[in-house]
Length: 497
Ligand SMILES: Cc1cc2nc3c(=O)[nH]c(=O)nc-3n(C[C@H](O)[C@H](O)[C@H](O)COP(=O)(O)OP(=O)(O)OC[C@H]3O[C@@H](n4cnc5c(N)ncnc54)[C@H](O)[C@@H]3O)c2cc1C
Image 1 (tube, protein in one colour):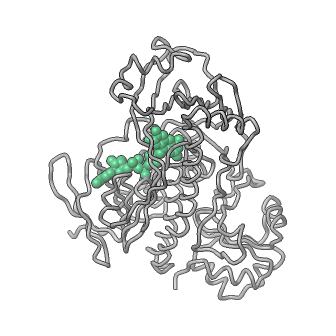
Image 2 (image 1 turned 180 degrees about the horizontal axis):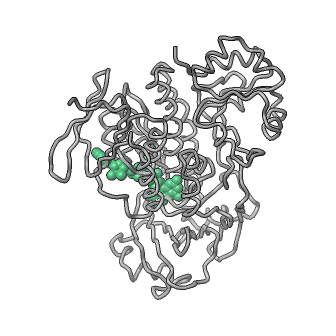
Image 3 (image 1 turned 60 degrees about the vertical axis):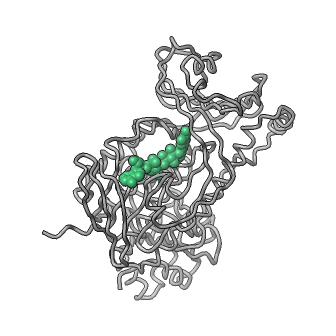
């Protein structure tokens, strides 16, 4: 029997690859996932994700399961100076934000990754091969051949796929094969990450604390349950080995916790990078997650960016593989995602520069600004797409995510819309378009709503519009005031010939 040709092969089953595999599995595509390791990476890395990411987890059917393991970021962040004085408080809230989810969540990365992997068992069309390391790739234009080594028996195997996504992390082999250069955005700094599990109640804050002490900048975070983390800057002249010695680790946090109070889960030194690749697609090869961008974690956005990549890529791969769109649609992946990723990295670098201040005079200047409330470095850039598959002519809200209100029947909007394009109109805009456009919507498998609920009507009012077209990733294609405008923006709806 001939080997199957998978629709998509994903290299790497970290959070990016696992999210993408779940999304493509839901889309009914045949997917091969390879990872060289046997299990999830055991050491905690990410501890925060945002509301848009939770919405993606919802859309892959795991909202409730994730909510059981993640806590909303209700407590916010306090900036404290060397004297222990609180200079600025960034409040948190459990209230649902625009995505129909809390704006921030805290979690334990290995638990989330295990959940995403378990989620794949729902899809007979997704085949996972663990302990299989990619060794070589060749894209012959019609498809991709992957040479893979099974690490259990040291056997070489070959697979074929129509597209390959390298979600294989910072040292991506797929990226190396594609020859996509990485641009350094300026921050490269070692930090010690120290995770503990409390063994008894300890008087530690529920909120995150940025200890802006120029002698040793540190971040403290209440992760989930009894897990607590300190991220501690490695200072020039530090002896890394000595720094990691348990006696020294506990000494650095002895103001707050003692070895009798908690067990050390792990301590490791990471060098935080700020890099972005140029060339996220070459032919049938694509990159996602840390394989094409890495950010210092000061905004807690590295994994979030990989999950946004997965959501952006899924509906495009589906449209192309189902013959609804030309494969040039995949070119919009980098042009849409890269500007937002770059902005976030640049912001994290700026915030890092502020938190990492080690010069006492500069620190005093910074503290004065903090007291004056200087908040601009903390405002995340709007989730806006760069140029791509939407009607950019009218500017925002096109290219921005559509909110996710709760509908009268109790469902969240995305549950009602499903994984497809959506056309929502009123006041005759739907009836007013041509038969050809109705036909296009039908060929695209779009859901068409001509009597929107009040919560959506309110949104249309606020945008002086009578119709809106949404992509399956819930970004806005465009808004229309008339049937003619709706006709025009519907050209962005990919439809089978
Ligand atoms: C200390 C720290 C704190 C962080 N905090 C946050 C945070 O709060 N919020 C946030 O959003 N992000 C945070 N991040 C970033 C986040 O952890 C990463 O962005 C995320 O793990 C990247 O996921 P990924 O799936 O793209 O890559 P990875 O998790 O690196 O996964 C890549 C996978 O590819 C596999 N692989 C590699 N090469 C091959 C090969 N040749 N063949 C087969 N398989 C291969 C690997 O085994 C691995 O499983 C933090 C990172 C660190 C280090």
